[in-house]
Length: 480
Image (tube, helix red, strand yellow):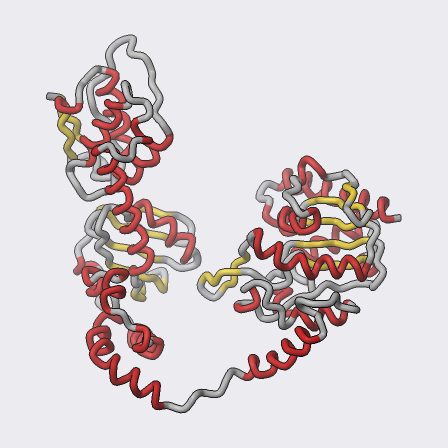
C-alpha cells in the first residue's frame, strides 16, 4: 500500500505530482491511500513514489484537469481517490470524460457542481464588519463555506473590493487583502471575528424597507439562502418576523392609494410619445441631428438607458468629411452629455493635433449612446457593450451617417468596428486600409484612445500611440 501525505486539504499541486508518480510507477487505485499531513507547509506539497525508470510521459484531457480543480475542493475524503481512479482509467479509456453516465465521472461532476454552488453562496453571503487597527479602517467577515472554496473565491473579493483592506475568516483558511496583495493563513475560529459594527442597524433598516411581502415565497427564499448561512447575516434576524407579517403587509399595500410616479418618468413620457409618433425612434428617419440628439434621451431600444445618467449623441459639423465612432460614453461623458470629454477624449485630442487633424472639422460619436457600467464601491467601472446592444444602437449610427455623409468613417476599437462594418474587424489585420462600405464611404479601423491609456509598458504604449497617430493621418488624407 502506497501512502501519500498531502500538505493541505486543497493541495492540488501535491496531488498531481503524487498521482503522476503513482500512475507512472503502475500503482493501481486500490493500492493507494491518500491522507493530509497537518504538519506539512500550508498550500504546498508533493508525494508518492518516484516513477519507474523509463516510464513514458502522458497527457490527460483538459476536461479532467478543469474538473480536478473543482473536485479537490469538495469536502469529502473520497475526492483524492476518486480523481486518481479517473486518472488511472484514462490510460485505457481516453474518452472516459465524455461518458456522463459513468459512475465515477458522474460523481466527480456532482462534486464539482457542489463546489461551484458553494463558491456562489460565498460571494452572495459574506458580510464584512468594520474594525480598526494601527493602519486605520479595515473589514473582517466570518464565513463557513460548504466546501473548501476560500482560496478559489478570494480573487473575486479582491477585484470587487479592491480599494479596501479586508479579511475573510473561515474554518479552513483565511484570506487577506491589503489593497495590493492577496494572502492566506490557516483557518480561524468564530471568536476571532467581530460580532457587529455600527452600520448593521442601517443595513437591517434598509433590508426591511425593500422586503416585498407580496412576492414572498418562503421555500424559494430558503433554497437560495439556506438557513446554515443565516447566523452570519445581520438581516437574518428580521426574516422570521418579516415572514410572519407578510400577509398583513400585503393587505395593507393593496389598501393604500397608488403613489405618484417619479418626476423624471413623468417628464420623459410625453417626449417618448412625441418621438414615437413622428418616427424618431422606430418609424420614419429623423430629419436632423438635433432630432437624433433629442430622441436618444428617450431611446428604449436596449436596457442600457436604465443605469445611465443620459444619452450622449454625436457632435460636430453637419457635413464633416471625417467621422469618428468610439465604443460608448465613459463616466465623464455620461455626466456631461458630450462625447470624448474624459481621459480618452484628451488622448484623442492630443493625437489629432499631432496628426494635423482639426477636431472641430470632424464629427465624433459612439456605437452605443448610453454608458454601460457596474458599480464597484462608489466607482462606476466601464463594461464592454455586448453584440445585441451594439446592434440595437446601430439604428442611430446609420442615421447619423446618412445626415452627416462623411467621406471616411474611423472605427475606434473593436465595438465600433462591429457597429460600422457589421462584423468583427481585427485592428491588427485591417489598420492602414480603406475598406469600402455599401454606401461608398471609406472605412478605417484603429485603436480606441482608452486602449492607449491602459497599455502598462512605456515602450509598448509609445509604439501603440505612434501607430494611432499614423492611422489618423491616413484617415485624414483619405478624406481629403
